[in-house]
Length: 526
Ligand code: HEM
Image (cartoon, rainbow, N blue to C red; front, side, top):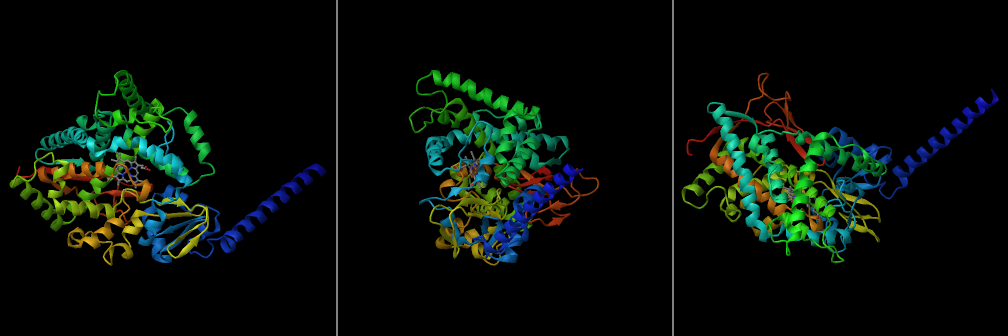
């Protein structure tokens, strides 16, 4: 009996100590932490739970963070040790080239099982080495090859859509969002591995890769918000058996890389192909050794991961914004028709001809502004000696971040009508204003960690979407009990729910749309 009491007593003492520790921790975070003077949600200021983990689970980051900034202003404490900032003047401080701030531990969760990649590498020196080694794979010299690669996938997409229209006797009802995702995956397959995955050709996600890739990214982002337990999850991912769809994908990817390794490395000078994979196989480490098979696999994996979702999201959002505004849609079509009629462009559109559609390009910029594919906070860690950012001094180790989605909708960055889709703003601006608007656009990130595939991504979009606008009349399939939609109502990128919204957006690391059903018919002009 005595020993039971003493065990309970001991438990009570332990619980008491834990409770007191928790109270002390909470009081410290609220009143004595260097960030205690910065406003924010209570849960973030107490440090008792991660506000970002909640967003990662609820998939509502973009609009929830925007609400916080509307309530608290330009600088908001979103975690015990992290502030979100939406002040354009902070861009060149947080994402500076000189003595760059390190990425936060969050990014480590974006690495695959083959090892570190440029996007996931936190250490700046290591990142610079990787970027130098892998740079030739993204070089403009390769653009003619990239164009051919993208045109192959584009043709397969068009053939599939034409088939749907024939099958639908003049009107094809398609989940345009899904087929664009398949196109984007096929295109990165062509770009990074020299061969499409063939999804558009059959018009089907044969191995259920799409939901698997979505889940992978969602899990990676959620795990990244819990840096203490993240290493455990990463070790588990290495030992647990891969789901069948992952196994098939990695099997195909690795098989292609290995066969190219065998063929190309036997020939001196790796002269077999002129593509991204060839350049990655020729990439060199600082000690002069060439990239190992595993390093090439990791680099290819990061292209597949970073280059497909983002491009597909941009294409969907662009179609949604343009088709959703009759006046804009009419102007875009007129511009394309006129350019074709006078022989200024032909399809598939050449990269160099993209500028011949200035109104379309303005729509693309406006899309990336209002629906940046990555709305999550692009976080960095303040280095030794601290940093002055947005009129605050932040001590070493503080995490500072900006969300492209939030910044792009603030009047400080784009004026009072920042939340309105208005492509004209890019055409009316003078050179100086345009430079400022470009500088304030974080859709591809900024500074030394800016997206390596920026030009490739915009090239893909500029090739495919004008072609779709030229060839087809696109209308959103009306949402009804009889329609193929899985969501009863739609949800916009700003979280607004409505029957008229043509797709359903979730906002986490990426602002992903689903359920984007459209009615397509051939335009009489063709
Ligand atoms: C419209 C399309 C795209 C958008 C909006 C986009 C956006 C982004 C963003 C926001 C980042 C992260 C910046 C940060 O964390 O600070 C990033 C990084 C990256 N993206 Fe893209 N991306 C696009 C297309 C592509 C494509 C097509 C590729 C490959 C062919 C690609 C490859 C990469 C890589 C390798 C990184 C890591 C760069 C580094 O840290 O050195 N992206 N991208």
